[in-house]
Image 1 (cartoon, one colour):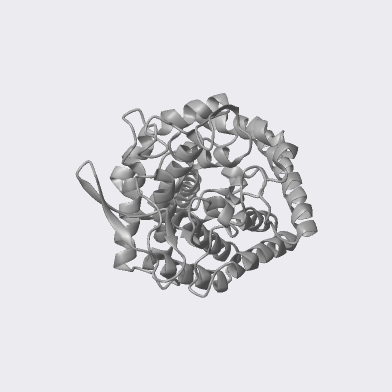
Image 2 (image 1 turned 135 degrees about the vertical axis):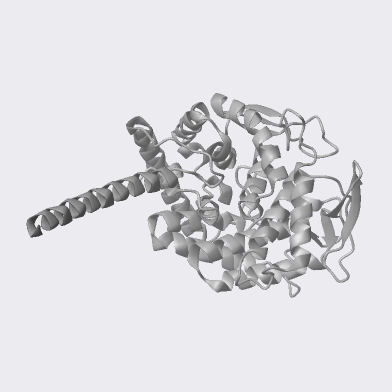
Length: 400
C-alpha cells in the first residue's frame, strides 16, 4: 500500500511539473505576442532579416547626419541661421529636438551638450514675460513687436521634450512658465459648422496688454501643436498643469479643431482659407501630432478620423513623394526626413504589412541622400524623443 501511495505521489508531481512547464511556455509565448502589439492594439510583424539590414543602414546614415550636425553646431556655437527654409530664431528650442534624440539613442554626451547650448539660446530669446519675439523680417507687414502663437507653443514643446529626454526638471520649469504666458493670450470663440472652437490668433503684441495683431481661422497645424503640448503638460504629474481642468478643455478643443477640416477621403487641407490645398507635409505632421496626443486621451472619434487618413498617408509613403502647397507648390521626392517621420507613427498604428514595408523603403531612400540635408537645423528630422514619450518600441524606428 505504501509503494502504491508513493507511486501515486510521484505521478502527481510529474503531472504538476509538466503542467508548470506548459504554463511557463504559454506565458512566454503570450508575453512575446503582447510585446509585438503597438500602442493602439494593432499588430506589426517581427522585422525580417532584410528589414533589419535596411534599418541598420538607415541608422548608420542617421549617425553620419548627427555627426555632421554636431560639427556644424560646434563651429557655430548655436543654430541661429536659416537653412533649408527653417528659421531657428523662430523655433529655437525645436532645433534641439534632434540632438536630444541623438543623445537618447546613442548616449553620446556631445549631442547632449549641443542640445543644452541650443536650449539656453532659446531661453535667452524670451522676454521678462516669457514670450519669444518673432524676428521682424518674418512679420514685415506688422509694425509692432509680436509674439507668434505657433512659435510660442513650439518653444514650450521643445522644452518639454528636452525635459523628457534628459530628466532635467529645469526644462519642465521653462515649459510651464512659457505655457503660463501662452495661456494669458486671449482666445476667440470661432464657430465652424455649428461647433465653437476657442482659437488663438496667429500673432499678438508682445507688450502688455497682448492685443491681437492678426486674423484667425481653422489651421490644423497650429491647433495640433497647441493640442499636443497642452496634452503633455496636463498628463505630467510634475507639471503645474497636471490635471488642470482649463488646459484639458483647451487641449481637447484644439485637437478637435485640428481634425474638423478632414475630408471623407481622409485628406486634411492646409487651412480653412486653403481648403483645396492638400499639403502632405503639414497635413501628415498635424495628423501625427493628434495621434501622439490621443495616446493619452484614447478618444474614439480622434481614432476614427486618424484611421480614415491612413490611405492618404500610405499612398504617398509608397511613392516616397511629397505634395506641398506652402510656402510654394512642389511635388516630388522628399527634400528632408521630416515628412517621413510624421508618417511613421501613423503607419505604425494603422498601416498594413505593405505599408510597413513602404515606410522602411522610404526611409532607406531618404537617408541614402543624407548629405543633401546635413545642415538642416529642424528638430523634426529625427524626433525619436517624442516616440519614446508615446512608448513606441525603439525596434520599430532604430536598427540597432
